[in-house]
Amino acid sequence: MENPINSLKALVPVEELAEEILRDKSEVVAIDRRRNENREGIRALLKMKEEKVWMAVGPLLVRLPKEKAKTMLNEDQNVLDVEVNKIRSELKVKVNKLRDLEFEEPVPGLHLKPLTKDEFAAVGQVLGYHA
Image 1 (tube, rainbow, N blue to C red):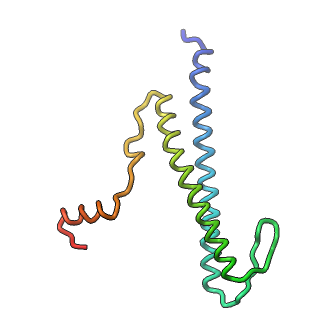
Image 2: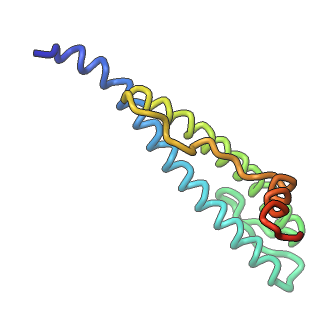
Image 3: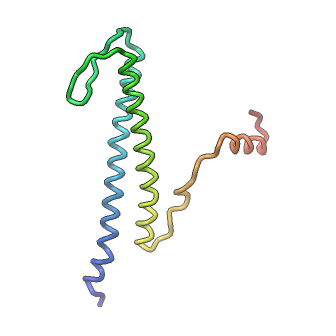
């Protein structure tokens, strides 16, 4: 019969990494929600005719020029984009590490990258499409 202590020693790192992956996934969802809220705010600013708008900055409600508010939202959007891309790339590594701990093959296609513009044009030429 197998020793239960050895089984626990093997399961602990697997469970810890799985929890970390779940935590990262929920963080990506939270960041995506915030990105969507920023997009909605930017879109609403584009439709407004007023020169000054009210905007929540943390717990404060402040009145700002529309362009300043739009700049702040765009900067926040860029920071969120970088953050979510960083988490997603780390998530790929963690998933493969988890699969290694579970003695499974890495997820096929997990590290695929999109074609560059030049590569896409070359594929189009091979298929007979003209850009």
